[in-house]
Image (cartoon, rainbow, N blue to C red; front, side, top):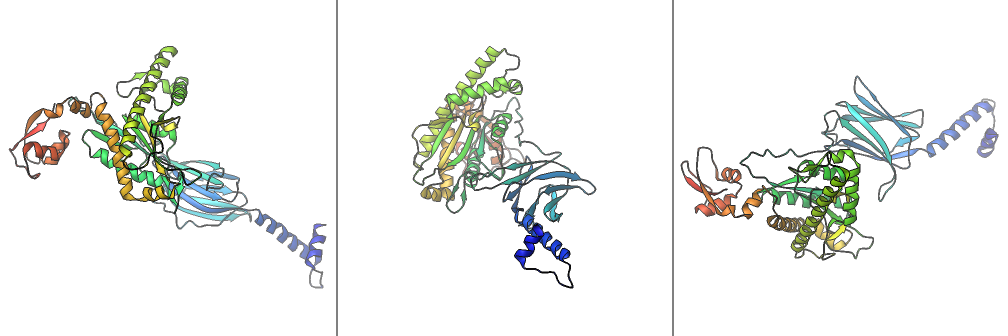
Length: 460
């Protein structure tokens, strides 16, 4: 029946030199194959992102696709088979530096299936999953590769606290989004992830150059870190403050202004319940260094201790947020004059006062132009820095250099005799003061010093 229809529509006739059956078979084959080709899922682009957690490969698809994945050895390869798929892009543009992948190649199988082969430098553990369309992205297939020694999260090493050494105030700085998650997008493809990374990097510079402070970047490049993982990195690194930097967006271009968020009562309550319910959390410490474990406490006492901790952090976040608002007000318009409260996941650490700072509306063309400007990024970072420092100076963590300075320790002087190899900068670092303050106290016009010279130094 199908053959008759094909012949009728095509106008073909049997000839003396050709077999009707042979012609029909050819036509039927072409008919079936053209139908199959019309239903192939296309791979429109391939992206590779490297992070401390993993190497992520993203296939942008025209529709969902069935796939399977398996490894081969001698040599090491990872094979990704996709059913009824065709490749509409190449691999030559992909930078594989610092990844466990040597090369990527492909071939068709069975006329309609596609095989992609990753030639590997190292043994990897793969994980694959599909993603549904969202915002500007369509269907995607994600393949994550984990090397044997790859860290799940980049954790800053704990400070080596000698008995005579004073503690730094550790500021964890979280640049929102990253990698395959660009965040909000402004005019001219201005990505939120890039703007907030630029401001976060400026913040790191300011805190790193301030005596008594240490800056910790939650993500150090263009890769994505899970929301829970961000607070986990801050806690494991014993951070005293967590700042999460974002840019806002709205469906209309009129919305504008910066905002500061702290954890809400509802968010704090739900997080406390989650901590009490999960055994691994109860075994952890709350309250930072010298904190308390909930593991050996009965439910009622554990709930009370956690509630006290969450309530205290919420109050600290609100007060610190108000200090930051005061600093950024001269720099930009405020969306709200008071600290707002929400149940954002990144704010939910039970023992770190945390803020989420929306630096402006990237969906507003005028504010997008400001956010694109390096000068404005610097001004915004400086304002956030000054707001946090003002709060910490008034509420310094016990045992920190800032606490000692707030008690008037910086007004007391000791003496130091210059030895071979000393520089003014190295002495300033050793005693947690600035080289400029040493010059002022000692009446020096330059950083030049000589062996045997006696310097006056602020100390305990």
